[in-house]
Image (cartoon, rainbow, N blue to C red; front, side, top):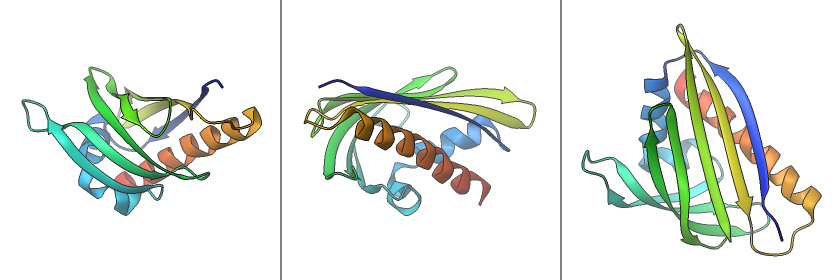
Length: 142
C-alpha cells in the first residue's frame, strides 16, 4: 500500500488572516466542511489555539477517526498525523498574498492503510482537495 498525494491551487478574494481565522474555527468545521462529521480540540497551544484535534470524517469508503496536530507556519498552516484509522495523513495550506487576494496552495497526502486501488485513492484525494478548497471559499466569501 502506498500514499496518494494531491495538490490544488486557487485564488481567494480575501486575506491570509481571514483564511487562517476560518481554518482555526475548529468547532464550526461540521457546519461548513461536509466531510467533517465532528471535530474536538484535545489540546491547545500557549495562545489558546487548537493544537491537537480529533476529527471524525466521512472518508467516502468508510467513516474515519483521526487525531492530528496543527502546525502554525509563517506562510500558512499544516497538520501532522498522530494516530487514528489511517496509516498516515498530512495536509498543508500555503498562503501567498496578492494584493487584496490570496493564492492558496493546498496539499494532502493520505495512506489509508487498507487495500484500495491506486486509481480510487487518486480520485478520492483529487475530490477531497477540490471540495476542501470549495468549502473554504464558501466559508470566507459567504
